[in-house]
Image (cartoon, rainbow, N blue to C red; front, side, top):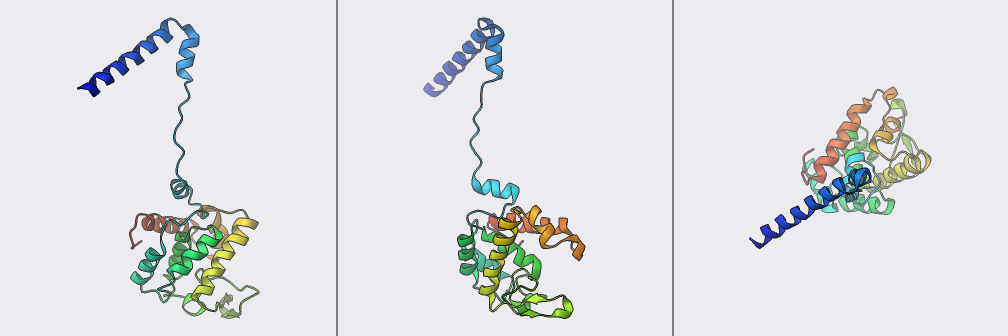
Length: 206
């Protein structure tokens, strides 16, 4: 009862304040009411990242969760979770995005070129790794899944973020998987964002 009584007293005081400003303060009083600043709490970093899908940020999934996903999909890279997580921390890129690209490009290394090249993102030929399958346009041959993981992060950080200033998925995909190469850019973006949202909820199957 005491709580209700104080609430009623507070409401009465507010009504009294509004009445005084409206009747005694004149136009300036009304203007004051209209222009009262409202301070909304800032959105959290994780919420901002989810809304804009910016790849830069602290990890939103754990190494253990990454391993759960890789094992569930029977990936040959099962057990890569800690390396994928650590490379994300060192580059400032949320590892959930590396996981999402890995799934979209090769179903976690179970299909396509990645079965041979150990590349998370089916990277084309680069100066510091052998170039294989030239008859199919050429792909970079990584030394191991860990090596492919590190190269993917450095590609995104050094080229897409630092050089091209592309930070969000919508900015990255048109260069990473352009429509001119036969890709559906909108579908690619949607797939990455869906996977990210799913894993951030703690669900394994995207």
